[in-house]
Image (cartoon, rainbow, N blue to C red; front, side):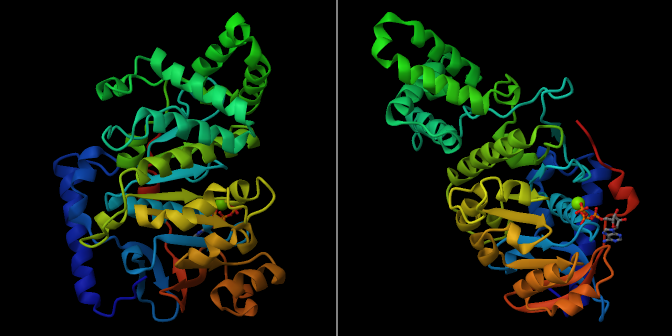
Length: 419
Ligand SMILES: Nc1ncnc2c1ncn2[C@@H]1O[C@H](COP(=O)(O)OP(=O)(O)OP(=O)(O)O)[C@@H](O)[C@H]1O
Ligand SMILES: [Mg+2]
């Protein structure tokens, strides 16, 4: 976070960035979230996210993730305190810098202007799915197709418990599905074919369950089918059209999960985050030396984190994707911007690793005590907050400021584009 004293220089940088953006958008019709805009992202570095204003000094306050230990930003506050508005503004400013943002929207209100949206449900408006079998890397010299089979089975077996025999039968069926899709280990060019879906894997297993030569495996095959169908039977996991990692990592995406059943919301979010993490991790660690563009590849924005973090009851469960991201994501260039009502909705790994916090108005004294403890602010001071985006910001280890978040102007907010 930077409360830059050399206001003149900062303003000049910001004016330059705005002019470049204006030139791209108005002269060349290149908009944030397009591949072309991403190619020009170097023009918009460093990454300076306008947050709002210091309530006392009236200085403007910007978040500079590149100057922090990491790009992890936690936002806490009661209902109506301004979490969603803050997330939308932060997400939009990051996009304006040409860095992609992935929004997982559980309640359907985190509409970041300019960001494409996809609806995930079984409704007729929803036709895009998440395919656990999408290839994570085309760098055949580093990652073979066999690694891909294992990764798919790993993702599935995080949700359903598979015995040794079930796992090996599933692995075999996944490999067979890739073969049926025309992909061959020794011919990386074939990996660009449309990947198979889970439906294919299930059909193969069903066929094997009837095959006389597989009688000895029949019980494992059948139990494998019912386990996979039970967890991943929802149509979003078997659609021929699915979210493409490369699109997410280039242009960003808002995934609207608000219409899906609760269990499916968390499973889609979990699967997607694991796929994204693997795709990013396979690109290798970021160097982080030259510019924020080398430091940050993607920001993941999640409102109502509680839905994801409390799904298994224990927020500290190391198998939770959020806890994995909190410990591993920084070095691969992933930033996390997470919001919830209480600090207890985040696991210890997430809380311990977050470099930046914004604590907005709490619901009651108990919440004020818990949230205040995280940033070293007295609960009474939190209780005095006016709501609507007023809060205490902690950054650079221990600095704390009272700020008013600036939400997006109605013009920018109405610029929301749905696809
Ligand atoms: N920075 C802001 N400036 C001015 N008004 C704001 C700001 N942030 C929020 N508000 C006002 O407060 C209302 C609630 O904000 P928001 O939806 O972001 O709250 P929330 O914390 O996400 O609540 P919930 O937990 O119920 O989703 C907004 O509709 C808006 O009217
Ligand atoms: Mg909200």
